[in-house]
Amino acid sequence: MRRYGKHTDEDDIRTRPGRRNTRPRTNIRPKHEDASEGLVLTVDRGRLTCLVEDRVVLAMKARELGRKAAVVGDRVAIVGDLTGKKDSLARIVRIEERTSVLRRTADDDDPYERVVVANADQLAVVTALADPEPRPRLIDRCLVAAYAGGLEPLLVLTKSDLAPPDKLLELYGHLDIPYVVTSREELQNGTALARVREQLDGKITAFVGHSGVGKTTLVNSLVPEEQRRTTGHVNAVTGRGRHTTTSALALPLSGNNGWVIDTPGLRSFGLHHVDPSQVIHAFPDLEPGTEGCPRACSHDEPDCALDAWVAEGHADPARLYSLRRLLATRERKEGD
Image 1 (tube, helix red, strand yellow):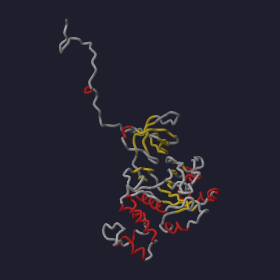
Image 2 (tube, rainbow, N blue to C red; image 1 turned 90 degrees about the vertical axis):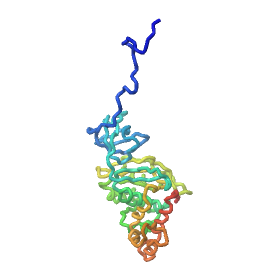
Image 3 (tube, rainbow, N blue to C red; image 1 turned 30 degrees about the vertical axis):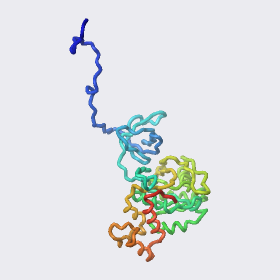
Image 4 (cartoon, one colour; image 1 turned 90 degrees about the horizontal axis):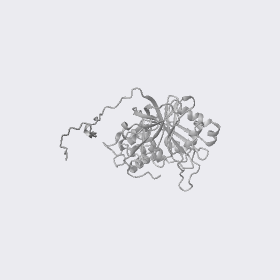
């Protein structure tokens, strides 16, 4: 009986290479210098719709990007099939540096921040004057997020045929924040659109607002070629509309003279990611009064100079109340 020892003279035995014999991994990644530039228009379940030159291309994120996610408004580098044909799929290999970022958290005690829009020039805060009732606290939160993210704010007050804008303009009209007041009739005959377009031309504008304020209706009027389904019902008890815009979408204005980005309706706007000391910057009417505050003043303590500043008539007491409410509620969910 023949026995095979440790060393045999057979040279035709097939052996499987071990893992240690395979080619080692490398941290060197391709630079993709031939990648094309694209703009992210919308994101849906891991698939990103991008504009590459004049073509709409469907793409997915490359594995080498890791957990870094691209959002609407991002400028990206794309390789692969850029024809835009049906069933084609390209690959996003790089996300370019952002010039601005709109962030929010679900609640003030939620540490997970969500990037809503990138590279927008301004944030249009759309608020209905009635049906549903305006929410100044939510407006203040949006202003804080805009200043923190490097966006210029714009107030768009809708449904002026149902209620006058005087009360809100008393709070915000003197803050050097541009604003536009619209009514349903003016939207239908186009006069309001002309005023809104003056604020949008040549800029990338992200639209945010509480559900049911007419945000998507306004976007549909600005970009009639890309109609989005609007909120058809506002709950009579809660004053809130149903979410019908479920994902952000970038749309070009006619004449290629700017972009509008429609975002889902807001229930709340958490600011966990914003340093409390930076919140005062969203209240330019109160900020000069902080010069007399003690060092590291929380603006909600007995020695705060803002009380005397407001008592002397330099600002509306409602604005100081809004600031302190905002600072106090950063640790709990916005409820109004």
